[in-house]
Image 1 (cartoon, rainbow, N blue to C red):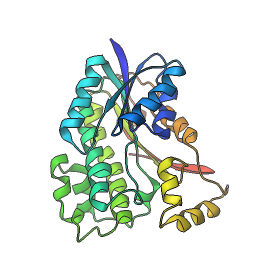
Image 2: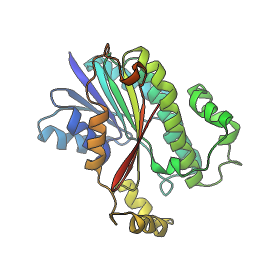
Image 3: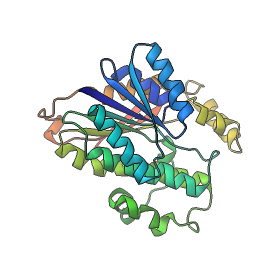
Image 4: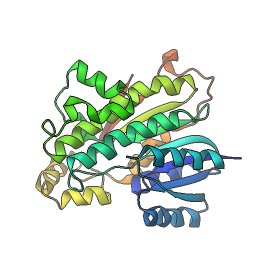
Length: 276
């Protein structure tokens, strides 16, 4: 049976990481839109990768469960690249919470049950989650540890608390980082690792929607103020993803014997790395 790399969200960042970590492995490309997965699969297949596709709605537990079953039927899941999501200009607060927040929690929970020893996962979060003011310790704990199916019932996530899409997006991406920190303990017990990457402005179809949307002026201003004066590219994030997903034997101790999670904030001109 093959080693399987599951790519959830068949966009440019997911593909960039997959190209770097999937040589000699089977790539299972999953997207909510079948045509997106098939288009990405054609590119990778023509470049020599072994690829199959699946349709998944990460906001649906049965759909995520079906993806897990499809992946494990192919072989051992040794890698998960979770790059699915919607942006503030693309969706309502409720949809953003369902996809970006709850969907990520589901993926981490379900694939954490099947990840192979020595396996790894990268979750694409966002720098936007780190621009949010500090939450209380109780809120951080709730976002990190509340059972996935109870997350959307939290008082802090109700419509009267999150009234606009940007706020919902920022909270969702903050939750992604907190959730990975908590899940890293569970993944570590299987000899596996899970990490987050929080990119700044990286040019993808999602970013282009933001640049041409109601907050476009603010986005362009952030790019102008960036030290190098330009946005990032998916391949730059792909390089960071490949670093994080590099193979570590499941019996090998990580630094200090306990670090199973690393958060990387990706900005142009420098990267900030935080261990936990």
